[in-house]
Image (cartoon, one colour):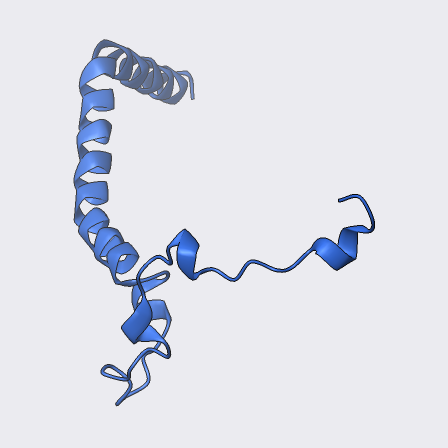
Length: 96
């Protein structure tokens, strides 16, 4: 029984010493794994963001890719001359 306890305790202490002495290598290995995992996922996230919110999560309706946009022919910014200016003389009262 004492021999078994000694072997188990020695194993635990040895494992702790190995982890402590190789701590930097272990952390660097974990960082590399995380970076490689993120770099594999990132292109899909970017293409989903460019394609629209949710990417492939929002299904497209077949046959609606080339539909015209209502009012799409006049998408330029209106000039100040083309905006209607309301007549406010009667609304503000006398003296204005």
